Length: 271
Image 1: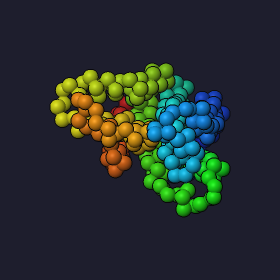
Image 2 (image 1 turned 90 degrees about the vertical axis):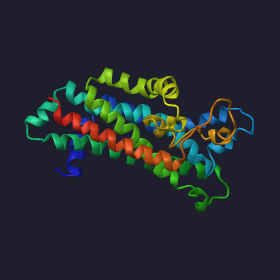
Image 3 (image 1 turned 90 degrees about the horizontal axis):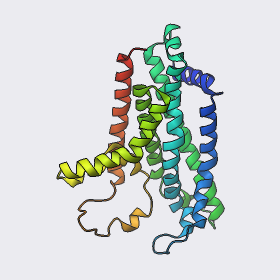
Image 4 (image 1 turned 135 degrees about the vertical axis):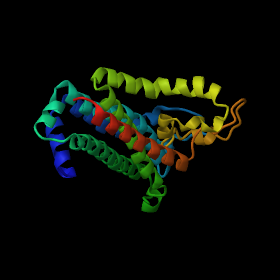
């Protein structure tokens, strides 16, 4: 089966799925509106100016950072649900029995992850441009696309989260446990491994930022870090963030690793 056929099949299976529709709508609504919280934040001008949220080119950074959280939560949950629900409702076994190969089934989920990442990136571009043009005077296309690298970094960030969600879904298979594991690892477990294990055992602190979700997050970090990352902090002898190049390369490697592990596990696992 080709890409179009597999994506069409996935759409037919999930177009009426409540999780897919609810989380998808919440992502579409929340993404362009979350940035307006910035109008209510009052911090010293030396830290940031609230206009940075809405004007080119800095709004690309803030929209990407907001998208980081929303992709992690909404699209990550959608991706896991599209895998685990197939197991829970026995449609995985039914698809294989009726002639769909394991390879096609896995590819269908991978293509969904890519399609969601492309769609989210296009939506990120659309929202950022619309918000920017409404808040910038005079209008300038050159200024609007002054930092095009954010588009590629946003796509990689999406693929980082969704490939990890794909792996968790295929390995754990139970919806509740998969969501719990995915959420806890990103929010808590990796941080504990990073600071309580890595920092104490590995003496070379230059490698501490290369954990998978840390690399994904560093693709679209909190923009205010740029203003403070060069301030020396006692007992910390490493950069707070990976460079954009380091984050892109590291995330790309992890994406391939997550997809490869998910594929290997699925092909050897009983259905």
